[in-house]
Image (cartoon, one colour):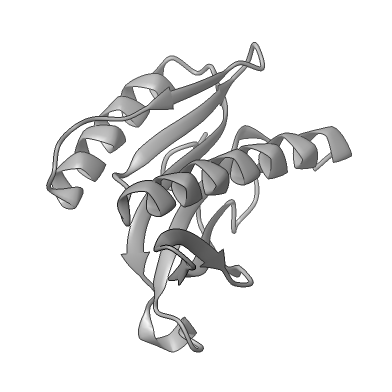
Length: 148
């Protein structure tokens, strides 16, 4: 993977974490969302108002599959508020889970990653809430969406 491709993926991850963090600080939760970087280097964000997290995620997966079929997705990040699996939990179990896949990794055996970003919601002074983020936990696996 080239440095430029690395930078695109890192930038997408950073933007996705920031978006989730801001939502957590404003509403103490966030709905799943999808970020795509298309071949024209444009970031597209897909969200919905479905309250059930599983249903919302499934709708985003359908959008993703439609877009992948068009073959114009370079990087995808599917983001959900979830608990970290027991075997990866250290001190904090709540996390922002980012499912990252990249077209540049299509030929790799482990071409996708979950990145769990543990968080704690903390109150400051007059009740203002901030999301304290902990070190991410990466988990690699075969790609599920961007495949040859």
